[in-house]
Length: 234
Image 1 (tube, rainbow, N blue to C red):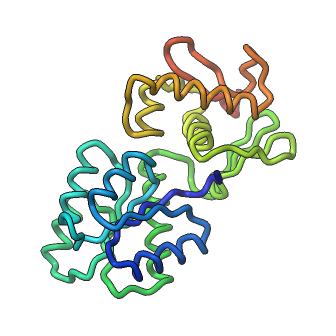
Image 2: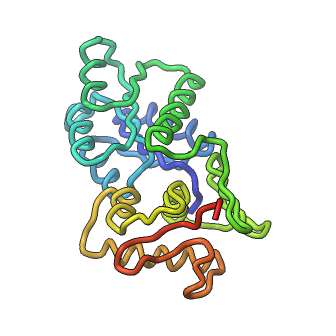
Image 3: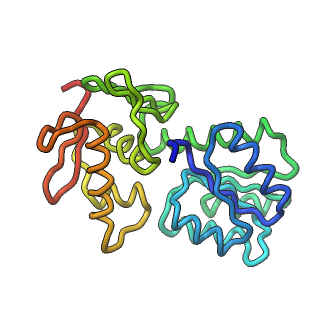
């Protein structure tokens, strides 16, 4: 799996859904699609996307209800894509927590600009490093814009989840993040197997980083507490 941003499109009209999917994939995004609110909710919880594109006029529920459901637990950015032009609908959606509202029909360039802006502003609000900046420690460089990691001149191939874990830890380099903090941020929910799942992903990351047991060249395990990433200034 690549390290592309994962976007969930919840839209019941096939032609519009396929069009959105095509333009997003053409511009380097990983796209998941749902044709109604129930499927959208299930896919959201299963895949933890980086962004949701949501139509309000869904066949099984009002898109506003889906916004409410997501915002009860998650801060995932949401862009509304709707034919509703009434100001009241726009205000309701934004008040419920939508990040942006695009009215149909829409221009491709404007739509892509809204997607980029929403992802960018969300990163900044979360206190992450500026888009386009990189983080370097020892012989490793993390490029946040390209979502890539180069170690000793070689690009390291991580799954999306593995990359997201590394990015999160490196953003807070020098600080220990607890297991629960990491799990909530990466998967959005916790269950009985969450810590084990995190540990398995971390073992795979360390293997790909060529870290020997106990070496802690990049990532340190605070036993029974969490993980920390080596600070670039230390």
